[in-house]
Structure formats: C-alpha cells, structure tokens
Image (cartoon, rainbow, N blue to C red; front, side, top):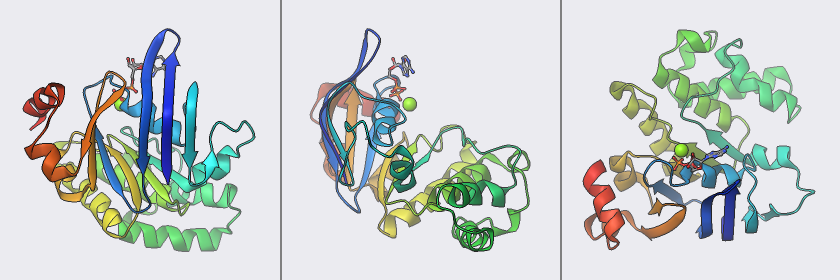
Length: 240
Ligand code: ADP
Ligand code: MG
C-alpha cells in the first residue's frame, strides 16, 4: 500500500528524513513513535502529498508520488488523515463537516452523503450530535467527528498524527477505541502516537524513529520486551 525507497526530505538546511526505507502492507496497522522533532509528522505528511519530499521514491497504492502529474485530490480521497488539532471547519455543523468533501470532491448528492455520514457518526458513537458545531463538542467528540469525516471519503489508508495528544486524559480511550475498531475491520493504518498501550494491543508492527531515521521496527511483543538499539531503550524508559 505504501512504500518509501531511500526517501530524503529537508526543510532548507535542516535534513529531516534521512534515507527512509519503509513499507506498509494492505490491512496492516503500523505505529510510529520517537522523540519530538524526529520527523514523524513529516514522514506521514509525505504520504498524502501534504509535504513534498526531495529525493527517493514513494509509491502509495500504485501511485508514484514523484510523478509531477499525480492527481492530488484523488490521492487524498484514498488516504484519510486525522490530525492532533482536529482541523474541523468551525462554521459548519458536524453533518456538514462530514458531507462536504464527498459532495464537492466525489460529487455525491446531499441525501446520500448525509445517509453515509449518519452511519459513520453511529460507528464513532456520536449520532446524536449531527447538528452541533465543533465548538459545542468535547475534544474526544471532535476527534471522533474528524475520524468520521476522513472515513466519509471511503479511504483505503488512514493516517493518524498524534490523534490523542491534545485530549484530556479521560477522552483518550474513546478515540483509541474507535481506532481499534477500525483496525479490526481491516483498515490499513499508520498511527503516530505515544500511546504505547494502543501499540501493544492493536499494532502489527511498531517503528521507532530518531533524528530522521528509522532505527528499529518490530512486532509489538519483541519491540517492547526486547528493544535492541540503546536510543530505543532510553526512549521506552521515558514513555512506558
Ligand atoms: P515530529 O512530528 O517527530 O515531532 P516533525 O516532522 O514535525 O517531527 O519535524 C521534524 C523537524 O522538522 C523538526 O526539527 C521541525 O522543527 C522541522 N520542521 C517541521 N515542519 C517544518 C516546516 N514546515 N518548516 C521548517 N521546519 C520544519
Ligand atoms: Mg509531529
């Protein structure tokens, strides 16, 4: 589904992704962790072309991202993204937040888009809030709406960039539960998170980044019980 080959990315003189080789298979759930500033957001933003990379090759569901003619809207319809800060449209109701992209990008008519949106709101456990505005919701509810909004485009891949980092502690599990259900349903997911309990329970593979490089990756059991690189050992000491 996703393949990075020798990908490098710099912001000016700052070399942020260093020779990344990495892939995600269909249906796989991969958690990425690592210290702040190591390049996790940059890496996942490359996947839906929110951030352009400099050298190397990237293939996402058969699309070559170095091709200048790539249809970015089409790519982003297939790759849903959920951000730390929700990024909902504050002036639109929950229902309109969810139906906007399917209507504009996929030209789905309003009634059908709303029917799908209501099913998705059910799935994320907030069907009673369709007329609310984002400002009237808790952080956990907002993030669940953001997940429903991404799912409304029927993506093949879901990217999550620290989806629970801005939430009060009591709301974290309601969002992680929705993500766990999605994983169980077979979604291909790439999740940047410090929630190591989620990684242990849900991930097929955990990846550790450090200063722009992938240092170690393994199945959760081995990753947590038998870390090899000393930088991972000291990272786990801090987060576990
Ligand atoms: P992480 O998500 O692991 O915290 P990021 O990918 O956000 O790391 O950032 C990696 C490095 O790139 C950091 O040093 C950050 O300050 C820098 N950076 C991120 N985005 C930009 C940008 N748009 N312009 C310049 N520097 C950036
Ligand atoms: Mg980040």
